[in-house]
Image (cartoon, rainbow, N blue to C red; front, side):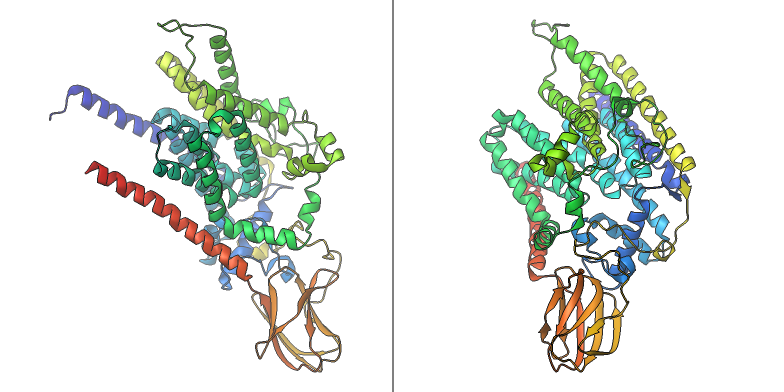
Length: 592
């Protein structure tokens, strides 16, 4: 069998397309990393960079002390301990924490993490869009480029420094891709294909969950809305089975995160629950959402110097072009040869993406009835106000608009390749200009500080994940306070306290300068457990038996149920790997 000229031409076009796509994606990644490379020491005022640097330093110290997985940051907040990892997953921070523990300066380790997330965002977006468009390499690369340089994403990365949120944004295109795969499946698809699609959606949602829980909540909400819009397809046997299995796979993969979080939320009341009843920051208007050049790099909290909250001109151009094109087609513009309206086959997916984009922008804006929801409380307040900042909904809007742009460019290309090329060039220019301007302003308009280690900034954090009983005003002694007993000596090793006690009379106790969280236990030298309780001011109080003299050890130990949840997650990971390896083996057998 000989190669024809047409075969060689096709192979050459594929190679050139791959090279061109590679260049576009790499260029987008490099342009999105300008601040990390040339302004790595910027320190935006009012925002979260210090917060995440302290998280990173605390995680590195916790791992160095031999605690894995990290559930309590023992060094945080003057050694009182902080259960941030239970409420705010730090799965992807383990890599930069490792860098810190091998003597990489804290600030540089964080910047490496930023570059890593930008690279993952570009690659995941390219592969996801390529799957959606069934192999369109150039268009996929262009959408990856636009998404990387979208204004809100760069605001998240370099102004807000919202590490959890911009990490989650890397996987939003994958979620959309997996969801589309399910609804694009065929009725005759066997159980193996159903299982694969379930695993893909479950994995993509799990990646969101271990990055940022609030983004996961938004994504789940919008997927539910889409499923309801497509209810005729949703309740077909294969689709509903796939969705149900994906939920089970998601729960299995994230059991080690979700169960401890749920366990804590049910066992005590925390400040995060109190603060989630109100929205914070400003509400953007249409001018803020659709501005062409991002204005300033100010704080999202300060009303006089707002941060950029636009989707960016490239995304705005996509939405405008899609709307005009679709209205013309719907009005009966051009006709195909068989007399039918020349409406794309993907119009249903495009309409849903456009609606979800518009809905997200509306919810993010000041035109949404936020005041009414806050004042009237109930389920609506619990659902919407838990997101904390209205502008967080701009993230889902951005990614949906970018995927919509992929469909639009493909439709234009099928009608006029030259016009699609012009449109692509225009979108690339509209993505580059604001993206570079925003980063330049972020470098020049913010404070700068070189941070080598956690001690340079003090390993402290916010108070969201303290129990409401914790007295934040008090200054406690740094040693165990004894009642009706004597402390002969004490020492601290990581999260463990070693205390020698004598002369315990009736109602003796020790109160440690440590925040009480479920999981702290105290054991005497002969192996007996002592009652470890929460004091009235939120500290750990250990009851000492009358007549007790000797050593005791107080420290955090994961509850057995948490360990079981970790085992479930490991089994789920192995099961997902087995799904794909068996499928690959089956395809090989069929091929042979």
